[in-house]
Image (cartoon, rainbow, N blue to C red; front, side, top):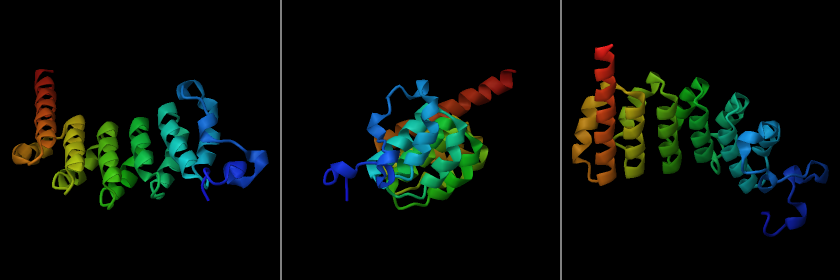
Length: 193
């Protein structure tokens, strides 16, 4: 039953003494780091909207305590794509392998957000899986993988990114070109130091 049909029992776990809802939590989340435990509990709510907002807010707050519960939320099909995005914002290396594991998901938004998150984290162990993602059937996922490789600055990706010059999607081609530029700039900076 969802909240539109059951507004009376719209509480965490259905227990009034534990009653709180994600929409009650302020939007300026960085000022409310004390809400982290409440948000972590909300990741287990029976209400999808609560889980969605909790996963999103945990990324905004930036508390490393949220990493393990968000990794666990990658297994929740309703919010996995949001959890992946939040893990990218947290930039914690503990999330790298779990995010890599999601790159084979059937859910395109999960693959896309996981690729972006891996780029934000910047761990080079994600390079090969991201290169493999450059041939994904979905253009948004290919674009995210190309951008992530540029964020990481992966020299090994140069050839694969160059091949995207003929990708049918203009945004993918632009992302690949921008990432090649990032990699070349990084290499130039390294050679001048």
